[in-house]
Image (cartoon, rainbow, N blue to C red; front, side):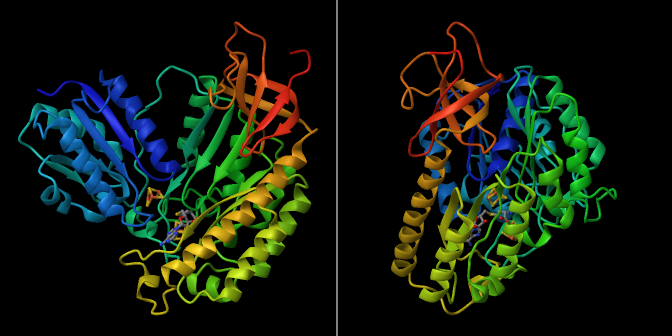
Length: 448
Ligand code: SAH
Ligand code: SF4
Ligand code: F3S
C-alpha cells in the first residue's frame, strides 16, 4: 500500500489555496504526513482554468509527476479543482497514473476517496457532480494558530461575464448558511486568529440564491464583525454591480472592516464593459468609488484588469488607463485577454492581435507601478497598526529581529521587535519610515 504521506501542488486563486490548506489539514488529522513530491505516497494537483492554456499546464505538471515518481503505481495521483471539473473523466485517458478526479463541489468527499483508493489500488474514482447547495466539510484546522484565516461564504457564480470560465468550473452560486459561517469563524477565532477574510467568487451577492437563508451580505458582515476576538475583517471578491448601499455604509459603520477593497474594474471603456457583460459603466464605477471614499476616506482600492478584450481599440484602452488614474489603485492584477472554451467572448470575431495586447499590458503595468509607488511613498511618516505574521524573509531584511506584519491595507511591513520572543499574531503600533518596491519599513515605539 502507498505510504500515508501527501504532497499538494496548487495553482489558482485564493479559494484554491484555501481548499488545499483545508485538505492538508484534514489529511494530517487522518494520520497522513506532508512530504516532498519525490517521496509522497499521494500527490494531488489542485488546478485553475482561468489563465491561458490551463489544460497544457496540468498535463505538463502530470508529466513532471510521472518523471519524479517513475510512473509508479504505488503513488496515488489525483487532480482537483477547476480543470478537473472541466475535463472530467477525460483526464483518466490523458494520464494513466491519475486515479482520482475531484471537481469543485466534490472536495468534501476527497479525504475519504483518498483513503478508499489507498485500500483499493486498482480502483479509479471521480467526484464531478455539481450540488444544489454548499456541501459542508469536516474541520480541517490543525491546532497551530494562524494570525489570519480565510472562511468561504459562498461558491460558484451566476454572472457569466463573457470572458470567464468560472461559472462553468465552479457551477451556480451557492451560499453557505449564516450559522455554518459564524461557527467556522468562532472556531478559528478560538484558536487565536485575529483577522478573517471572507471568500467567494461574488461575495456581495451572498444569500441571493437557492441556498440563501435570508441574511444579506451586509448583515453577515455585521455579525462576523461583532464576534469576540476579531480584530480585522476583509472580503474578496465583490462585484461592483452588486455593491449596495448597505455594503458602502459598512465601511463607515464597522471599525473591524479594513480600509482596503479589491474591486475588479476589468476595463474603463463602456463599450468593452458592455461586451464583457459586467453590468456597470465607467461612470457607475467612479460613482461607487466616490461613495465608498466618502464612507471611508482612507480606503485603498486594488483591482483586476483585462487588456486586449475582443474589439478593444486604442481609445478604449486609454479609457482604462484614465480610470486607473482616477481611482488611484494601490495595486492590480492585469492580464491579456485569452479565449476560454464555452465562454461567449471566445466567439467574438474582432480579436486583438497578441503583440498589440502585450504592448498595452506593459503600458498598463508601468502606470500601475507609478500608482503603487506613489501610494507607498504617501504612507511614509504615517502611524499604523500591524498584525505580525512571521519573521521577515531573509531577502527582505537579513536581521534576525525583523518581523513581517500587515497593515490594515494588507501591505507587508517590516519592523524590528524585541529579540527572543515569538511575535506571531501580536498587534503592534508602528510608524512607517521607508517605502520599498512592494513593502514598507517601520519602527515601533520603544524598539531600536
Ligand atoms: N470572481 C472574481 C474573479 C474571477 S477570475 C471577479 O469577478 O472578479 C480572476 C480574474 O481573472 C478576473 O477578474 C479577470 O480579470 C481574469 N480573467 C478571467 N478570465 C479571463 C480571460 N479569459 N482572459 C484574461 N483574463 C481573465
Ligand atoms: Fe467570472 Fe464574472 Fe463571475 Fe467574476 S463575476 S467569477 S469574472 S463570471
Ligand atoms: Fe482559477 Fe477556478 Fe479560482 S478557474 S481563479 S481556481 S475559481
